[in-house]
Image (cartoon, helix red, strand yellow):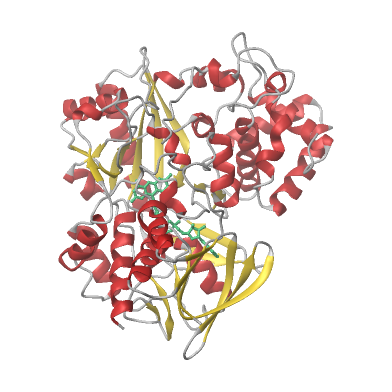
Length: 132
Length: 460
Ligand SMILES: Cc1cc2nc3c(=O)[nH]c(=O)nc-3n(C[C@H](O)[C@H](O)[C@H](O)COP(=O)(O)OP(=O)(O)OC[C@H]3O[C@@H](n4cnc5c(N)ncnc54)[C@H](O)[C@@H]3O)c2cc1C
């Protein structure tokens, strides 16, 4: 599906994405929306070294039990305003992972088979662009 | 051989490209990013965030405490900024003069250059009729509390707001050449006069010679070497400092990389029962204009952001994240920007030549931030916000310093004639030369300094 990261890494994004945006009555879950199918649109512009490291980590995370991922996400959230050492890594992960998840969720491009209320419609976001 | 190569095409490079080309010089403008124009700028937040910015969206300091936004495209950060145009005041210039020892750094001396760059663009000062609800809430709260506020002045022409255009869209580049970026007021004008623009060209190092300068870099992925009689570095605080560090100048210039400032910005959201629609219309029309806040070292800006950025700023997960995002239309937003001390910031490179940003907020910076955040809470309370959500992050949009101006080569990098100390053919007038944070939007002053430098180069 992705030409830049492995299927396992994509699976890692989807599992983390479902924790970050689980969905509710009005909004699809991360997986249901399927924006991750277009993850290469983002990754092709990211520094190559970042993609390599993140891809590897996401692949490892894809095999972890859900409670480990929930714990990790909570730790990432708690890392801001904290000190150095491991907190630095958690903050970097938080920005990297949430950056990918939110950029492939609050976007016009959903998965090929998605039908339903897209996240941007769910939050009622629209803007008018008057072209020249 | 070319007369000038300009490296970087933002506030500084775009203005210089025009003034030097108009003055009859033979100029090449190189830019690490791509060449987008009004009809090719990406139209969605996800697309423009990844395509127009360094780091594929965001960059961070070495401790991942602060995020940075700087553009990588022809026109530089002027394509993605709000184009608010402010002149500096005596407080900012007095501090610059004290730190640099340069006596021409006064408001009076800069005024003719401000006049000349302002003549290149259309400027609009907002009025009450331009307000969206976010601005009404901000000014209403300030009025109740006795906080001073002011209308902002923006470089724009024919934005079609009254016909329904939403200005937040142009944070990813203006689709109608209305925003007065240096792409519009500088580069596209100079192109008609024969300016050569090489995009996708990242400069790595420069080598100074008695009568010319050699630049080494990569163009479209291929190693390339260019020479010119004079080299102008206009890559911004991060870009220019990185080139000079990688060129091995730190030994001769110990101040290189020092004094990085960023105006740390803290955003908070006030949640209301009725839609606020902060993302609609002219989306940034007012800011604080309170002398007490100026003295206290912070200002309040009435802003907002598109959904991905807002989601990132909340730092919440799961149901709480979704609850907040469903309030997107019901949020007002204010940001506190701190006038930070240069002592806490330093730019460096690692062994591979990658940029490292070290930034520690000083005690004074933190006190200023607390005061700013408290003022935001007061404004939201005064207008009856049901809930206030503070973002735990701070970030930098105004990246300044690293190659500070000054008379003393031990304490500064650029001399009063805009030359790198001891390297008479390398010039800099971008945001890297700022000796300290002004606490005021920087781009108009970068343009004015660049205009002054361009004029002096043409005289010689
Ligand atoms: C979202 C946002 C909103 C802002 N709003 C305002 C505002 O309303 N008013 C205001 O005054 N300021 C604003 N700013 C800040 C302002 O835009 C910048 O301070 C200003 O543009 C800096 O000018 P510069 O010429 O130093 O650098 P830039 O404008 O950043 O230009 C530097 C250029 O050099 C290129 N470059 C860097 N390194 C290299 C290299 N090695 N080789 C080739 N090219 C290179 C970069 O890609 C870039 O295009 C805003 C900034 C942001 C991010």
